Image (cartoon, rainbow, N blue to C red; front, side, top):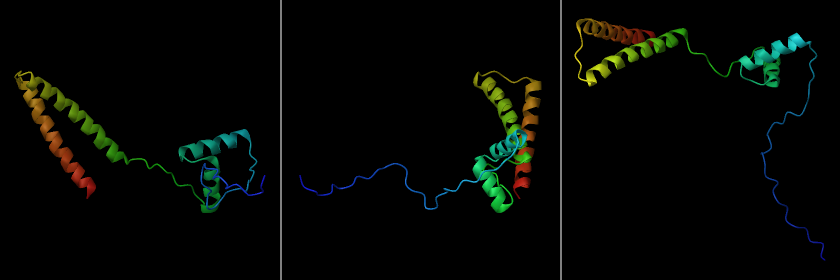
Amino acid sequence: MDNEEKPTKHAGGRPKKFVRRDQQLAVMCNRVERMIIETKAEKATVSVSEFLRNLALGGQVDRKVKALPKEILLFTATLNHLAANMNQVAKKRNREEELNAIERAELTVLSTQIKQFATDIKTYLK
């Protein structure tokens, strides 16, 4: 048998990180403090390690997921409501049923609401 080296195979798997975090830092706290830290990290959608590291190095922890402004949520709710009402009118018209006076009045109100809603959106986006 000869003593030639066999070519090495690549191990595969996850590539090595450029900056490896291999230093462990222990933080002592009581059970309540631990629960608070874990809850805050979960709200920020980061791991506890990342939460504490960002807090210590940067003085704050930025959330990864931004919440939508209240106005946008209200716009979405209004749009869903108007769409449901318009869908009911469209179903009735597709069955070739005539709208009575009350339904025509409601349709006029819906039309006005949609126009106002479009104006509100334009105003909000300016």
